[in-house]
Image (cartoon, rainbow, N blue to C red):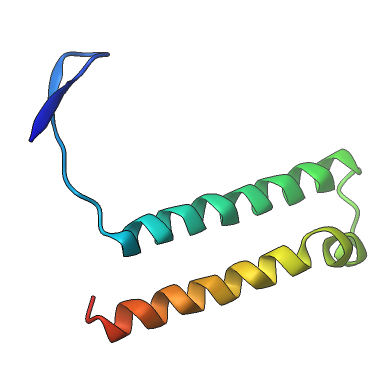
Length: 82
């Protein structure tokens, strides 16, 4: 099944995406968002040398949860052979 990219009229093939790949894509978006938010806050605060307390307060818990999610994704991929 295909379609046409409206911006430049190029035919586009549509492929089904596995649930594992969807989970990985969602993970990467969330990890990128945490990174972007932390970097923006660090820059807004004048790029402090000792920023670990702010990281621990605002971002560490969510980053740890994402790390656990990544481990689950990797284990699921290994157990399913892909």
